[in-house]
Length: 241
Image 1: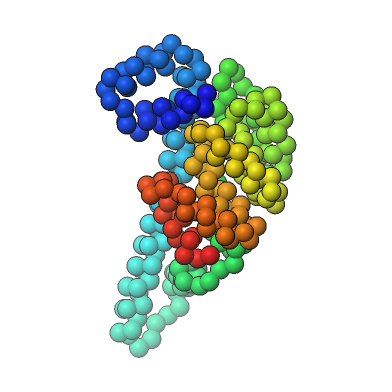
Image 2: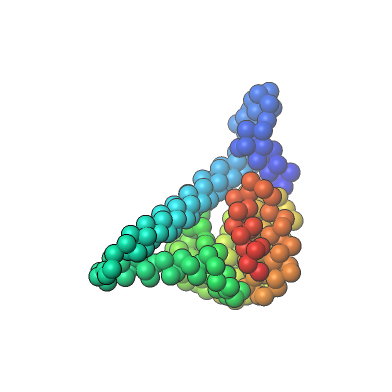
C-alpha cells in the first residue's frame, strides 16, 4: 500500500498526464484498496484545508485589529484627552497580546501553546462504524486526550495500518507529555509515505520543541518544503528558537 501514496498525491495534485489520470481512474474502479486509500487521502486533505482556512482567518483578524489600533492611536494624538471606553480597553488588551505575539521572546512552552493547533478528529470508518474510534474522536475534540489515547490504542491494535488513527494517537501522546512516544509515532509515520506524513513532520517538530530539543526541532522544521501546509509557520518558528 505504501507505494500507492505517491501516485495518489500526484492524482490529487493534478500532476498526472491525461493518459496517466485516465489509467489511474480505471485502476481505482477496479481496485477497492486503492479506492479506499484515495478516499482517505481526499478526506484528510479536505479536513486539513478547513483547518488551514480557519487559521488564516484568525491571522487576518489579528492584522485587522492591529491596523485599527494604529488608526485609533494616531487619532488620539490629535486630541488633548480621551475617555477609556470599554471598546478602547478591549482593543488595548488585544493589542498588548498581539505585541507579545509579534515581538517579545517566548519560552519553548509558550511557543508550543502558540503553534499547537490540532485538526478536528472526525474519523472515517470504512465498512460500518467503530464505537471506540467514535468515542475517541469525541474525547479528542473536547480535550480529553488521555481518554482519546486509550480508545485509539484499542482501535490501532486491530487496525495497525490506519495512519490517521496513529497520527491522532501521536497528538494525544504529545499533549499528555508522553513526548518520547509521540516522537516515535511521528517518526514512524515519516518512514512510510501516507496522507498524514507532512502533518506528522510538523507535529514532530512541535514535540521536539515541547521537550526543549531545539536542535532537533530546527532540523525538522527545515525539512518542511516550500509550499507545504506549515512552511510559513515553520519559517516563523525558526526565527524564535
